[in-house]
Length: 179
Image 1: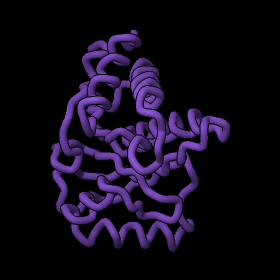
Image 2: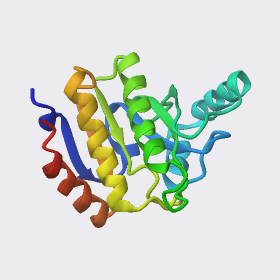
Image 3: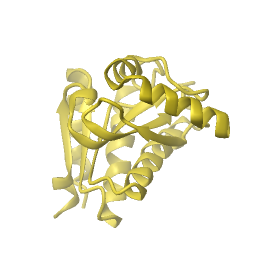
């Protein structure tokens, strides 16, 4: 299977998709405070918050670009991978590399936990103010590069919030062609 066939760009709610893992944007102190996080907490139930508390007790949170994994509670997934996105500061604080690390670390965790499918939201484009075009380029490029050299996950969904993110990610998928 060619990598391009393994990536699907879609619009929707990442918390409603059946996947082995869904990705959430979190704060360094875990958990996050954004719209996806609120939906995950609401739909997933208390198991996710309990898992956060165990992670914080064990390691004290996560750094920007890192990712941690928890059970998914009542969500239609086995796991939630929580990643700490960079806050956009004009591009002078290594934000591009840190966002790429978010995607790469999530994909590595998915692979390590035998996830055949993973669904990403548009990491960083909401309250973290990452420029949407740049975020789309980084997400698609990083996922394509990972899939070119790894057999799992077998399918990656990039679940866009809004028409603009969908259009930009779709354009980037055509630009990179994942070959």
